[in-house]
Amino acid sequence: MTKEILIRQIVDVLQQAGFVVSKRCNIRPRSFDLAARNAETLLFCKVLYNIDGLNEETAREMRGLARCLGGSALLVGAKTRDQLLEDSVVYMRYGIPAINVQTLSDYFIENVPPLVSASPGGLYVSIDGDVLKEARQRTSMSLGSLASQLGVSRRTISKYEDGGMDASIDIVLHLEELLDVALARSIDLLQCFEKHKGMNIPAEPETKVEKHTPDDGILNMLHALGYQVMSTTQAPFKAISKDTSDILLTGISSYSSAMIKRADLMSSISCVTMTKSVFIINGETKSQNVENTVLIEKRELDKLSGREELSELIDERTKRHIPKP
Image (cartoon, rainbow, N blue to C red):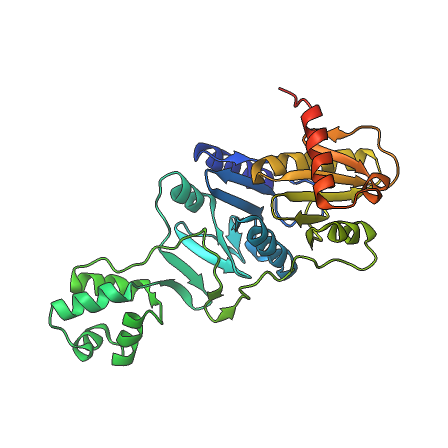
């Protein structure tokens, strides 16, 4: 299976699940390949045939984008090392859940969440500790008795009940058979995993808003107008600019065919993320819009005194633009 086939399969699953899917991000480097939205769910999806190809910098930017725009980051692939990804199993890579296409389909189309997570030591299941404790007490079974039947320590059973330890699949199946109760806790792919198997992921965005390179004068200008600015290094846009009412996907470039291609992609992504898209042009521009992306010359930005004026300019040019059917 090639990456192209994998992407087509993912798009097909997402569309069947009712997602609106952006154009594919085919500009390098890219922190994500697809943006998709279904009702209140926003996904930034990275596609890699081998999920081990995800690096920490890309994962950090994906998590930052997801947090900034109220979405979730997801990695979809086919294999890890020399083996295929298993169905209904979640693999973590730098704080981002990684799954195969079948698990994606089960979760979003069939509404069947995965139960198993992969770790270096094998496959594990998170136990609902409250259900375990209630079932054990209902059957009048002591910690020691249950531990003896499972071949583990009393402390291990206590940790299961406290929710402090995942269990192997065999242990969970044995527990469920002994107590006649379902114990496996499902995995919510849309929740950001702040801690997984001892790996700490900071709760705050790694790239804070207002962070930008000192020599990037345009981002400094946007910040001076009253926007919070989160710069990016691998996204199709240069930054995300936010104020109390607007979120702008922000590109910066001179007018060129490459800029038009990038602005068109930004327009598609902005429709999915429900944001505005603006491209600041160094020099002169030959048009005021590329699809839903508004083009503004730097000299025009220089004349603005606040974010309200920029917002009005963007809205004015957006109204003038008649989208293609």
